[in-house]
Image 1: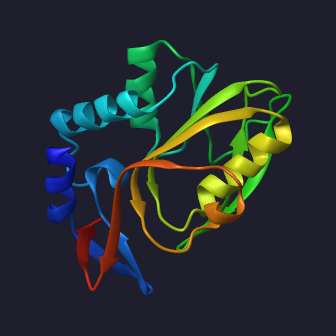
Image 2: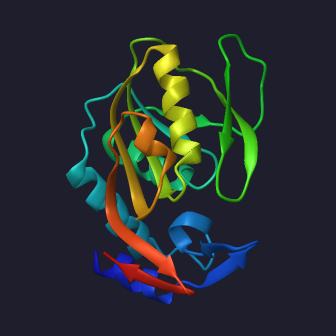
Image 3: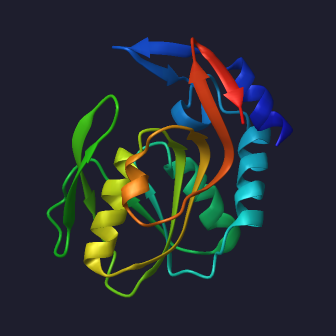
Length: 181
């Protein structure tokens, strides 16, 4: 995880209305996501996760590149939770609220009984993942594992959901500095 650690120390932190927002290649695609970093992260996720599942699920947008790389390596189908409705039969809407935004997301191609692995880039406030977990629980899926690359330590909406989250690295962001825990 050498490259991941190095990239976190190099990542800029910007203020978004009082929220310290980490700008990182894995979570933002800015600066450039180098193949070596993506490969390292994908390999680490594969070593820590259970891929005996029916589907890999990732929220749009920044979970997509991770989940795509994992789907290609494991032959597990990928479902992207989208930020827009397609109006397909069985589509499930969910409302997410994070430290810096609120919006709707839409789940398609997930059915009761599906065994799911959720992949995402960053767990910060937990608003997105908590809303996704609740919606998938309501559908009747079995969430086998949830893996994020980076977890910001602090209060999280995931604390109330009843699902554990595995992270490759835990960090704090204070006064514009990233500290790896």
